[in-house]
Image 1 (cartoon, helix red, strand yellow):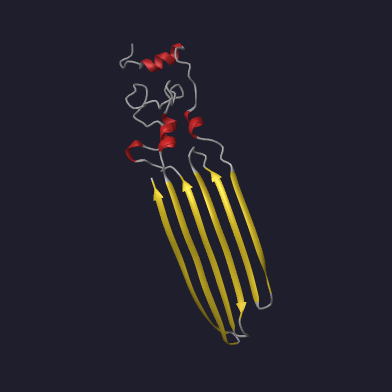
Image 2 (cartoon, helix red, strand yellow; image 1 turned 60 degrees about the vertical axis):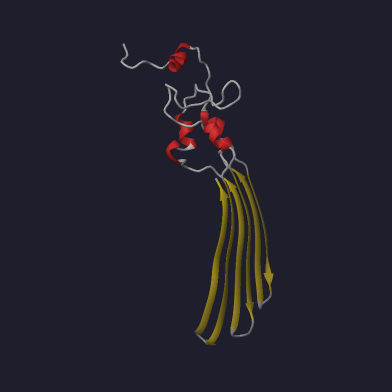
Length: 193
């Protein structure tokens, strides 16, 4: 005889009364398509050269309700203003927009941990189409419903970033140059969880 009573939910699976068999990870993960487009132009003359590149990237995350979009531009300009003075300018602005679940949600654990910890005989939706309550079950530890977490969590972030520098090089003598560079890295982030 068992010293600890076997939960009825497990006995139902063993007896064939509960035939539900769905991998919880299959309900919260999916194939994630990605699109990426780049356009580049370069050219110039002996005294002026340029290279400009733009990019757009859009990808779904493998977790439902997650995605990432990026718009970026790179521009490099190189101008020989005289025999002694050269000016270089590099600009790199970018904008990203993403929806991503927090990796860890405090004492409740993570969505992936919840999906991995849920037995495949427990449906993540109840017969009425709502979310199955997993807390308080005899056959499961205290975890959240992973499907409810991915469908109900709103975690968005927008980021605007600008990297740039300007470089002036002056040739004093053959083999002796003065080089002055000024650069910046600016970032603004707005998010909601």
